[in-house]
Image 1: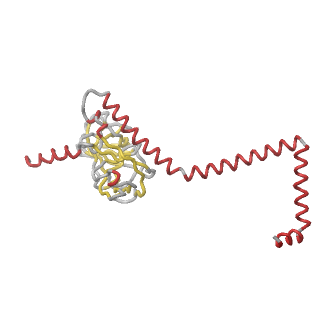
Image 2: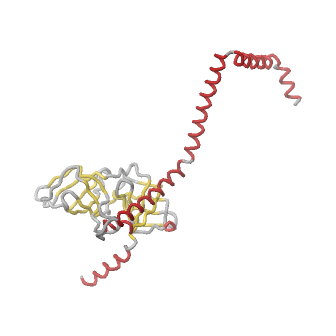
Image 3: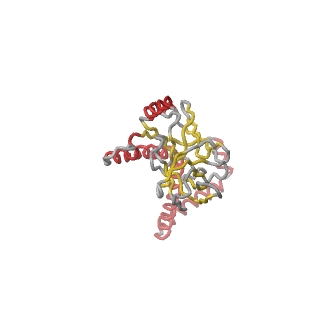
Length: 274
């Protein structure tokens, strides 16, 4: 306290000047309507600026939580739409049994696109119900297939992988083929085994065929960017631009058909007859 008094006495002129300025400012604002309006307008303006900045900081730190909530809500919405679709369809086939798929939302914590064999790491694992062999999609299209899991993480083989094979269809002409990646441009996939007499057009959609229940039928994969027939070939060489930009991939949905094991077990028996 004594130290404070010594500072005031030592700087008495400055302190007195500041006090007088405050008093004068108060009198000017109190006794002049114009200055009063300017004062209140200025304080309100800067108060709003500070409030917006403060709110922005709070929103930033709560963004991850909000995004996760949205992701979980999307997963629930996918399951609900699938159930409604199945209820409105009389014919029972894969298109109308999307409700048979479990949907688990997940965030991507690691993703490569520049390698020959690109993998994706998810922030959920076996404790969340994820197992190898499950399909992975985004809000835009197919992403890949789960290959390995731990308790809290999952590893996904991206479509941008040399061993990736996805059965697809061109709905416009009805022909089926296999989607692969040649390891070159991550913005282009290759659709093989489409016969040269098929009516193929640029911009045609490429969707999942439904031959494997890893993915439901008619999930969008991409669109035809270019095609040609090599001399002496009986099939097209087709370039497909994936609907999902793998450079911007952040959130995905892991899907699993509830009867996949039953189907796999039955089909395995066919090996005994070969």
